[in-house]
Image 1: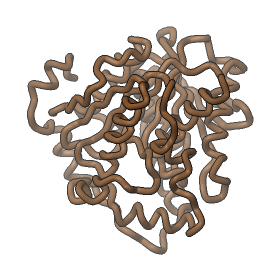
Image 2 (image 1 turned 60 degrees about the horizontal axis):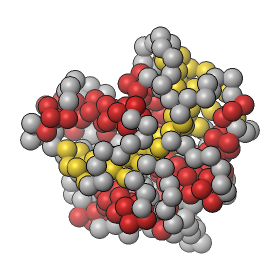
Image 3 (image 1 turned 120 degrees about the horizontal axis):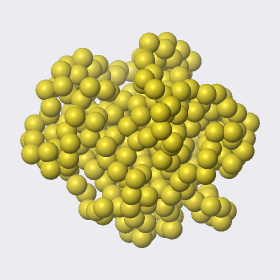
Image 4 (image 1 turned 90 degrees about the horizontal axis):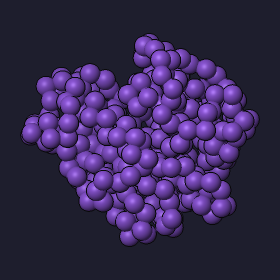
Length: 319
C-alpha cells in the first residue's frame, strides 16, 4: 500500500497491478435480448463468489421498512457510520452485489457501513429508490447497532445521485444533516449530457455510451431523466454537507463529477474532487491495486477529519 499522498504523486504511470486488471476487463455491448432481470441475476450470481473482508461481521436489519445490511468491524469501536447507496443504474445492484466492497470499506475506514437495499426501477416508481434510502437514514436511531457516531453518506455510480438527492431533501425538510458525503464515479446526470460520454468512450474499458443509451430506452419514452431525484446536478446544491468526489480519468461518467464539483463550488458547498489517472468506473471495487488502496485511504481521511475538505480545487492523481 502507498503510505502517503506524496508517495502516490511520485508515480506517473498506472500501477502494474491496475494494468494487469485492465487487461481482464470487458467493455459492455448492447444486447437487445438482455433484460434488467437477467442483469440482476448475473450480477448477483457473480457477487456470491466474492469474499467478505476478515474481521467484519454482517448483520441484517430492517429500517423504515427497508432491508439493510450492516458491515461492522469486529475488533474496534466504529469511528463513524456510513450509510451506503449502491450503484447499478437504479435498475440493478443489491446488498449482495456490494457487500464485499462495503466490508472492505468498513475495514479500511474503521466505520460501520449500512448498505441499503432500495427498490429498483422500472418496477418501482421513480421516487422509490430515494424514499427508501431516506427512510433508512431517518430511522437510524431505531437501529440496535447505531451508536450515535458521526454519520456519512457513501455511494457509487447511480447511488451517488440518490445520496446527493437525499441531502437536498434533508436540507429542504430541515432534518439533521449527515456530517459529510463521498461519491465514487458519480452518475449525477441521467440525461447523459456530459461531453465525456463521447470523448472518453474510446478510453473507458467497461462502460459504453451506446449501452447507456440502450439503458435509457428500456425505461421508456415518458421517463424524465432530468428529474432532480435522479439527476441532482440540476438541483439547488447550496447548504449541503462537505462532499468528496472520486472519479476515474478514463470513464465516460468523468464529466458528471467535474460538473458536480463546479456546481457545488458555485453553490457554496465545500467539495473536493480527486481524478485518478487511467482508472475506470468504480475502480475501488477492484482489490489488490494501489489505486484502490489510495481511494479508500482518502475516504478514511475525509471521515477522520469530520468531512473537512482539504482542497476545493480538482486534484488529479497520477498513479
